[in-house]
Length: 176
Image (cartoon, rainbow, N blue to C red; front, side, top):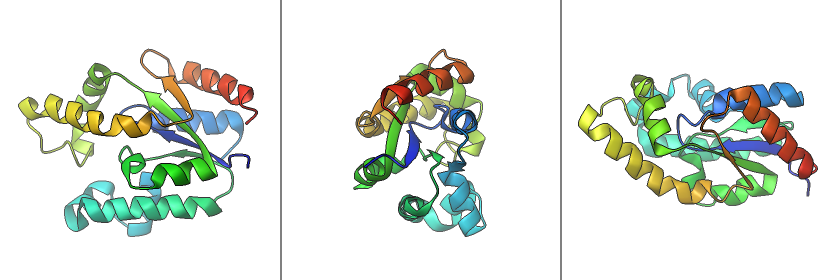
């Protein structure tokens, strides 16, 4: 079966939304962000969902999104950083699409996320001493899932357009 979607996976701050929008534009496909879908479905921001309904509810919503994506038209889809760690999610991702892991080093993630941690529910309440160890620990838990992607694309020093060009070349090799 030819993959229907392109799923971008990776840790928060890895560039999934930025790269996803550009890639969708280059491929003339719709762009879908799982977090935005969940926000629209619940009428609340991700942060509000975490605060009022908890992380477990949010993970259930991510699973619901993944199941709903089977019925979407062919799209470029940015998945939340924790979604690939949900039981059986990678199997479903690989059934309905091609997964691409945007791989970014711990140091780069920390630099990027320090600038936006107030917008990240899992980071906003951490003090400076807790921040780095938390990121390192969470990344080490999740990287085993990310590395199961069909394509692993380093996103360390690339400008977003350069990375999109590299991804497009890989998609051509895969006859996507």
